Amino acid sequence: MYRLLLALSVIGATVACPDHNYAVHSKYLGRRAEPGVKDWDYDASYNWGSINPNYTLCQTGTQQAPIHLQSTDGFSTAHVPTFHYDTPLSGNLLNWNYGPAFTVDTSNMSLTSSASFTFDDETVYLKGWHIHSPADHSVDGQKSRSELHLVHGDATGHESAVLAILMDPGIEDSAFAAQFATTINGTAPDSTKVPNFDSASSLPMSGMDVRLAVKEADNFSEFWTYNGSLTSPPCTEGIRFFVAKKVMTVGMTQMQEILRVSTFSARDEQKVWMHGVNV
Image 1: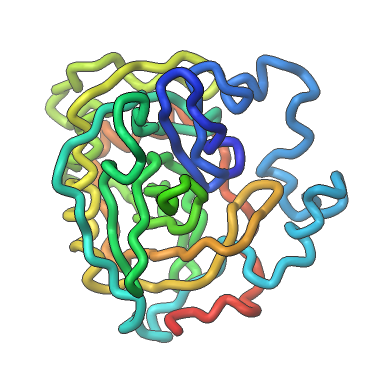
Image 2 (image 1 turned 30 degrees about the horizontal axis):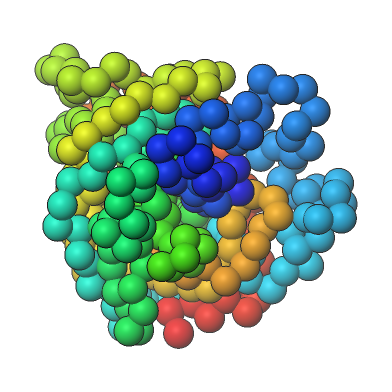
């Protein structure tokens, strides 16, 4: 997750599980173009804590994400989110080197003008979104094909909350995914398709409606929540996760397109410790 959030020096955009500072020409986007820049990968996430002293928290942290979730544990009645996703956003569509991503353009506005939600009298602001494939979280021992993360920061931009929505293919298209992925009947979005995982290109995009994602997750009417972390080095803690029970259904063609531009990005699930699940 960490690479997603390098600040946008040119367009002020942003995305996070990694942190969400994806600049058009950010170090994040150059991760594979520059040999040696990145010393970790998801297929060896069990070893992150030993490869770099800056990643110690990946091994010793008490609130590491993701974790396994169970429906038998029930759902949260605390930290209930209230959404303020009133206005479609402008930003940049890109690939965070692992799958589709979008960063909010804050070059002409403050982050506090972005879409937001409130919980526990705290308001957090959308920095961007990205997709993991396969899903980070498993539910009742099963993993979805993908997982959407809507990354939010506080007024200063510090990552503080993630809305997580599981994604699986079905017979109906997703209106949210239709903004960047081709539908079952072949209708393609107005913009060019999402760049491949090995591409550093970025596509300006206006009218990104994140309300659709929340709506397709049943407005988080049932959800799990816990204190977690970035899911990539340095595995910084202090991030509250909200995981919707309702799975987003995306069309078969949409799912294939998402997977086509993605590569493996699921960290090993972490042991539940001081996470305070649903507390």
